[in-house]
Image (cartoon, rainbow, N blue to C red; front, side, top):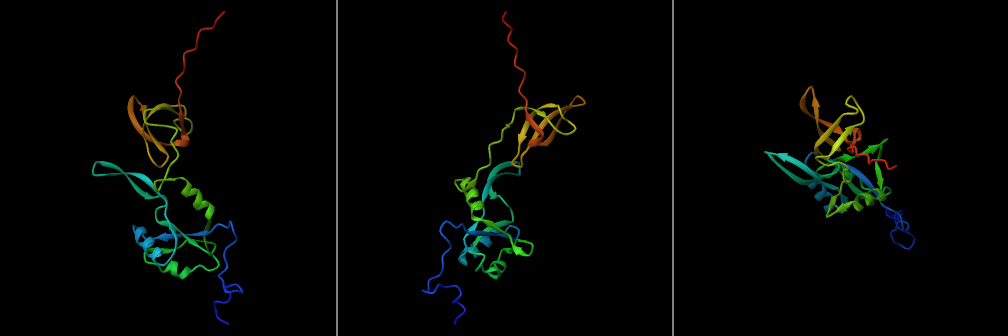
Length: 196
């Protein structure tokens, strides 16, 4: 008997996962700025790799550009069969720091999670939900020490924060706030006269 007998059916065929079964995905930690290098080496070894990308606003030398960047910087997903996964090959891949573990076991994600991420892609980039607030909107702070303050939005960043213009001590001051701390302020509409 060879060591391969436990992998094959009696007829010699490699067993397939049940129909409709979704694959598992391992989470790999990559070395700093070595994502592409790690992905290239993993693909060379026959692994399916997925690293979702988003557009991020990058400011450098007085220029602001939107460039694709990893949604989860320093991490990528690799499709594995947990029963037959080659963990040593994954851990030993150039550009990979290691497999993310939970309780001593590799942390695995369902294929449904990856499919949900892929479903949000347009042109290879994950789309962020449209912000309910835009630059120029009038907002009201609903939590924190400035609760009730009315202000105008100067900037909306990609980390779910807004920069608003406050009037403090009769001076304009800018301050960042989490989106959860503000709401759109609808200016009071004039009340129509009552008819008798």
